Length: 355
Image (cartoon, rainbow, N blue to C red; front, side):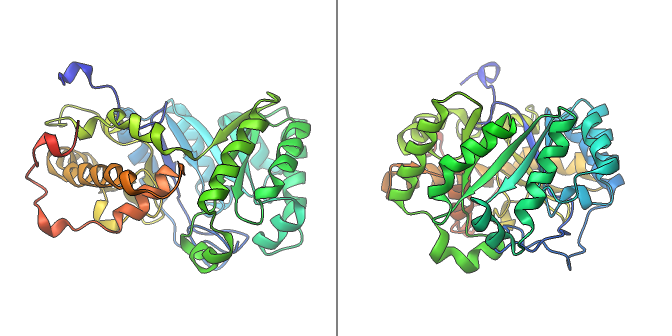
């Protein structure tokens, strides 16, 4: 494929950075993917993040999504969103809602495009998963405050076995509250979630129910519905969207062309696609050497990414189910890779990767 025809790598319509600047949170949710909580203090210095965002804007990224931890409690929250907006990023935010108020509302109003409030089911289920009887009250209060200022907001809804049946309720709640978006994402057994996987992980039949329910709700057209699973056949057909499967070299591409979403965790490490990817697939660290590290990745390190994608697509041939959470599939696949069988500096024949 000629270099001029290469467009992007991945299914995302935009080039997105998922920033997790801190693991500090006011809650210690039972299913938290990053095991964040009130006792956690690990965080990134704001100046380090801002310097990295300047580099990554030049690498083609245009959307910054903050989560955590609770990002509004991160000491550098205002600095980060202000700087990101000035660099031209569209800034989005995922919050549990509790801290939203006062001066934070002014900051959100000025710099944040969309605030997504986390939901884990109807009130009783949400409170149980969040570990406090006030969790849903925080959600309602945040929605009232955002609505009063006519700010754009949505909901990020974690679908577990317990909350699957609450999806119609979530749609009605979101629509009546004036939300712009309702995102359904399946429970993932990472972080503290790994301790409750048996009771909450969706089965293949549950994935089918999730898909059908989301399509039925989407048909009402009262708000946008985003579903973080897709038919396996569709994913397989879109294999060509990952240009690193077919490129002979990528040194002239931007990192945004190669990897989206890009994840930055609370240690400052950058990873492809999803929080929880095996550390052996790290791209670079957000420090003073970031530009050089990205260039080194384009020369050799990206071969590991190519191997991950090849193995992930190959695994679809024996996948047990009609629907898949693609990014969690990448996380699981990353943990099975054996890099001892090949060198990062050697490309295997294209015929092994791209048909």
